[in-house]
Amino acid sequence: MSLLDTHLVDVGLAEDALYRRAMNPVLYKIRHKIRPYIDYELPILEYIQSFHRNWLDQYFMYSANVGSHTFYVLMLPLPAWCGSLNLLRDLVQVLGLGIFLTGVVKDMLNLPRPTSPPLKRLTMSHYTSKEYGCPSSHSANATSVSMVILIHTLSSELSLFWKSTVILITIGYWITLLLGRLYCGMHGLVDVLSGTLVGILTVFLRMLTKPFWDSKVLQHSSYWPLFIVGLYYSLIYFHPTPVEQCPCFEDTVAFIAVLMGLDLVGWTLASPTTSTDYSSHPAKLSVPKSLSALVLRFLIGVPAVVLWKTLAKPLATSLVAKLRPMDSNQQCFAFLRRTDTRIIVKFVVYGGIPFAAIFAKYIFEWLNI
Image (cartoon, rainbow, N blue to C red):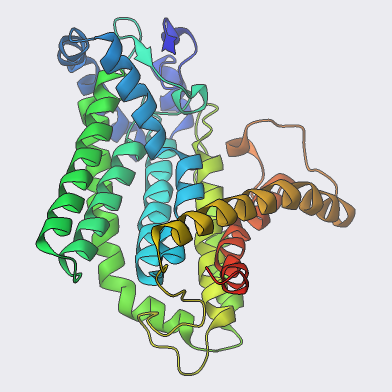
């Protein structure tokens, strides 16, 4: 879908006085330094868009969905269903941290996307087009996911042919998503470059902290769940508030909750003999016996996750509403009090998704697939 004249409604394009008045002085100075580059790069982006072809429009619009929130929620359990909890945890950790960091920077700097006109935006999601532009979360996610897959592939026992195949597909995925953000007019060079750097940072942070963090999660200490919930909720509680209505905080709540849920389900099912690399974790599934078994796991597992998400929201809303009333009628998540009922409900619902994905293991074992 093509979006024209979005400068009329885009966030980040208000009078400069608004940002000077509303922002921290240091953050405003940083924004003031970066802001001109977003305009300077417009001729380059216009040149990229001069190559528009209908088939390229369709390709880049549809491929952008592979970097979307919904895609990751539905597809991330797949490594666990293939028997690799390590890969699952690495992917979820870098994605969750990437969404959090890009969301924090977006809401701190309040920088706009490249303006339309002169650019023409191509997107299937009006939701993401309402966010600030810098840094690009699509670029951060594509970079971190690609790096994690490459790390696991290179250290695997796959044959040279299959390693080469996975590497080529991964590089193609990365280039497609990054180039697509520029081609579709959704991001500029500053956004994509900064997002890529965030993605690289998340992978380094994950690899550096992985031995310590995973070993702590797997220690069967009774205080650890309280610490996990408190830590992850604090990331939401202290998340900065943007100047304008930006929906990216909603994604932050969802992914931070998934991180919390993954650690909690890991702790719940851990035993005293569980190794720190999850190789002997009770939640670990065997590798599917055949391609048909993998397809069946996917066809059963995805509806289980969707069913949880569908049923949990009204149930959690009803239960929380009995304990406390809705705080306000504010529609923008970013402007809600961090203890608002809707934030708590979203935290609970998305925190349960890893439980639904991991506990699907028992259905698979019962069906012998």
